[in-house]
Structures are given as structure tokens and as C-alpha cells.
Image 1 (cartoon, rainbow, N blue to C red):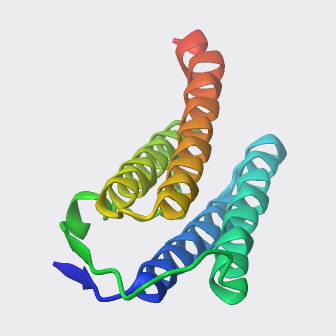
Image 2: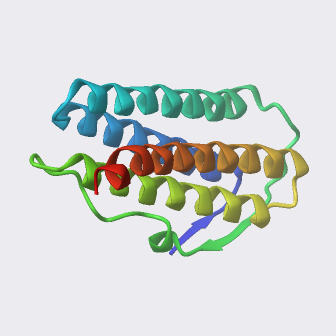
Length: 151
């Protein structure tokens, strides 16, 4: 169980989460069996880089007034996908794994938004949750168009 003592702890955690997503999508792109698959995952690397940059900017510029707000305990294990990419991963497996990770990120940012009483932080986390939800939808559409149509 992770407990955050202040907003910097929360932002550091979120920044680390985005870095893990960057690394995850880079790994998937490196293992891609087709150029289309590789480009799909590289686009998501860029999206996650933008999320990380947004969080770093908020942390560095102290865009809002923040007290020593304590964020309640989170059950992090509920939001972290344990599955890792493997060398012979099929496109279908990669898409499923990506959807699960985006869903987990959405749930985490939604939970963070509800754990703070700072309206600006709430908006930041809800915005990030919405982005993760869009990513999941994009993977679902890709899955529907490529995998389900093949079956």
C-alpha cells in the first residue's frame, strides 16, 4: 500500500507511472512483428511522453497553491498490470495487454482525482484519466478492426 504525504509524492508517482508506460510501449514497438504494429506503439510512446511532460511542468512550476495535503492510501496493486511483453507476443496479445494497462491507468488517475480536495489537481487527474480512456478506446477499435474482423 502506497501512502502519499504531499502533492510532490503524488506527482512523482504519476511521473514514474508515465515513464513505465513509455518504456512499455517502446518495448512493444521493439518486439512488433509488423511495421504497422511498431508505428501504433510508437504513437503511444509519444502520447505518454506528453503526459509525463505535463506532470513535470505542474510539479516544477507549482501552477497552483498547494498545502501539505495528505492523499489517502491507495491499493496500487489494483492499478498495476503484472503482465509483461514477451518476444513472441502476437498483435492480439499486445493489444490486450495495452488495453489492460490503459484501463489500469484510467482507474488510477480517477482514484487520485477523487482523493484530493484541490480542484486544480482534481482537474489534472481527470484530464489524464480521460486521455488514458481515449488510448484504451483506440486499442479497442484497433482490436475490433484487425482481430475480430479476422475471426
